[in-house]
Image 1 (cartoon, rainbow, N blue to C red):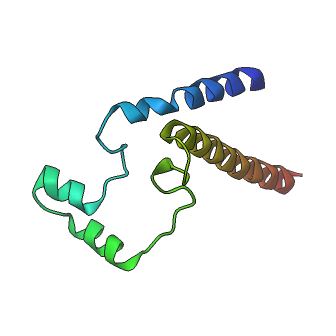
Image 2: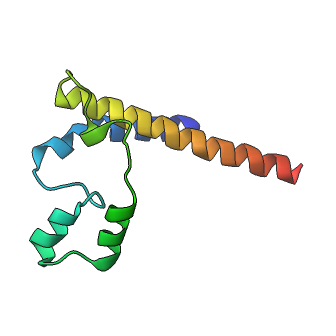
Length: 100
């Protein structure tokens, strides 16, 4: 089962550069300007969040300074997959300890 999961994860990471084929933003990564363009207005909650939270991203726009876009996408995919795996593993370990 683990081998199949890692193969699936590898295939998904290999498909990452498909996002470079479109100019549209990825689902859920919309900025207020995108809402204004598509909807004609910016939802109130989005305006509030953007005005109060200023995030600094580890890999902004999935890129690394001086690196090719495709390389940046792959590195972002690997970093994201590792972070998510680590989070789920941590949760698994905590649940396992609680049951014991």
